[in-house]
Image (cartoon, rainbow, N blue to C red; front, side, top):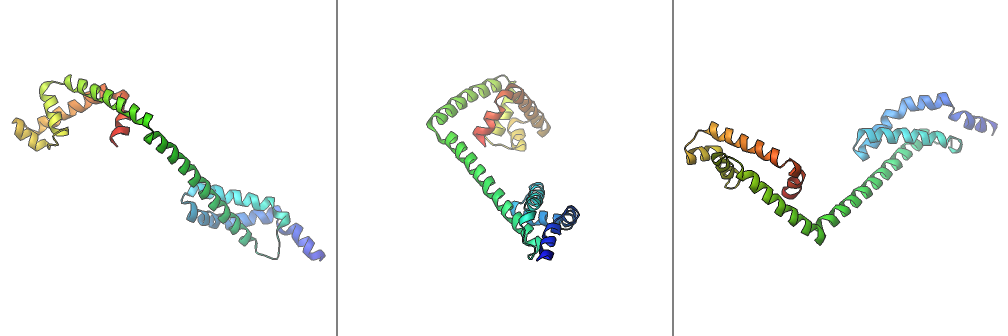
Length: 186
């Protein structure tokens, strides 16, 4: 029995633990990465698992391989991460769904969309006539540059230049609404 006690106290001394860490860290990271699918998170889980092993070193049964303890710790911490991350994502989705589907939100979205429509019309009306016409044919009638060039009897290069000018103008005029445009149209 004294041998077993001395084994237990010497089993995970600092040099042994450091050797264990150097030998098994990479494998534990790879094991965790199989579950969490993120290398940095897997490294954190592996490091945390070694800390847990060190903290519990006094209670480890030396008749069993330490690697099995470590593997179990990594596995459990990886599953806990997945559970906690999934829970967070579900709460986020629920919050977003409440926002997207509440009647107040729909009313607000309609008001914002109406205001945005007015701003877009105003910005379009400020464009030179040919530039506006090229833009409207492309974006609202879904004509390709070649079709617009033939329809207006101008070159494709002129269509490209007019579209570039129109888009630059709209970006400048609607810069404060870019986020709203993105949220409403995508």
